[in-house]
Length: 223
Length: 93
Image (cartoon, rainbow over all chains, first blue to last red; front, top):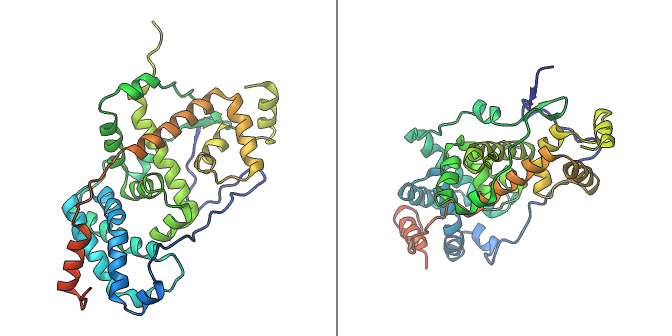
């Protein structure tokens, strides 16, 4: 039998043996910002939103774009759009989720405009996932050498390069989930995709990164 | 893997490597219910392949977290407020 690769589309429901994935909550604290004042056009409340959220939103945008100057421009445009569209916020998500969705969309539009493309295509990410035959690994993953991981001086550079190689939508999910630690549901709302699609892309992105790092950290076979 | 686990997997009574891998993100992120998590742990505890893969998967996540440090400009918020005062009907305080 030919080895089978995980090629299920993100729309295909994945099924666990006899249980379901527990859901995570999307609600949380909004900090000290007075939402009602904000919605009523209170400039002081909006200023507070700018001061409170700018650092984190800037980090997210920089990590998507890889360009500090462009990220600052996008951040400013994000707040301008948020200020002008505040009346459209329907409280269906956290305010910050709504704000970050604006910023992420602007960052993605900037990427498309500048044609700063990732080196990996979606299909290549899929091919970087492990192969299975009759539900079992076809090839045993080679063990990593912990001393190589701790001693490799350009480890951060390797990981950064790997993240930058990921297709933009995978990279954005890695940034939001694994670096900024937003919940799956929050990321789904920010990107306007299903939570299932976030989980599938996150898993494939992590698998692709693991594959890219594997040759650098693999334990040498004993002489 | 132990014979009983292989048999259970073959009969579809326990998850195999492919199923465990498919839901590894949920497992690592603590999004599986207790029963499924325990089934996964039974499998991973006996399967060298999944054990290695899980270890590397977790290491990849932790290395991702420590990477991509970003220096946030100290005047970032003030620059944005200045931009808003210029470009929107925003006076600020």
